[in-house]
Image (tube, rainbow, N blue to C red):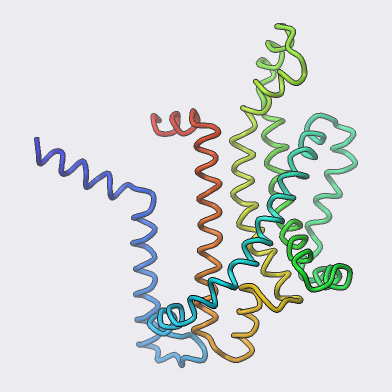
Length: 265
């Protein structure tokens, strides 16, 4: 019995959501180190993992301070994408006229490189945080709209008819039928959106900024400080992972029944 419990505990640890990615990350790091050593790649091209870790520890305070404006710009752009994206998705899903006029323009806007128009935001709004927030918003907005439209359109029509037959108001129908059915798709879009918002914030910092992870990356590239650049990329990845995890936690709290169904299956 004790042995059986031990096997169960070991399997539970192995099947946890963080262990397998951690093992894979360790294997990639080992492969990286071996490749650099065997192929004798010079440090100014690809630094060894040890040099990156040393730079990460030595520059941790600087990188942590630089992560604050990047995170603020990311959250600002992401919040705007949610505030504008979901209502627009509701209009598109609820009206074929709005969909015919607005949806093609949204698709067209995504073909415009954000790096190309980011300098305009610096000209219009200066070197503050506003251009970074707008850049993050432009990248994070589209996934929210697309996923929310798909979610609202996938609502079971029989459920809508049932709500109408029970004399439910439009607000009650939206709250009890449309929104719960659309939430899984909306949260899927939010997870993509928050990671793209990080990219958008860094793009804004590349164009014009004297702070943030994007500024650290630009300075490191200019000075050929590749270990510091890789350390900044690690911090940037951590920002994206933490924000993604927060959205995942909120999703589990908002729609716990979906995870129960997946776990049972």
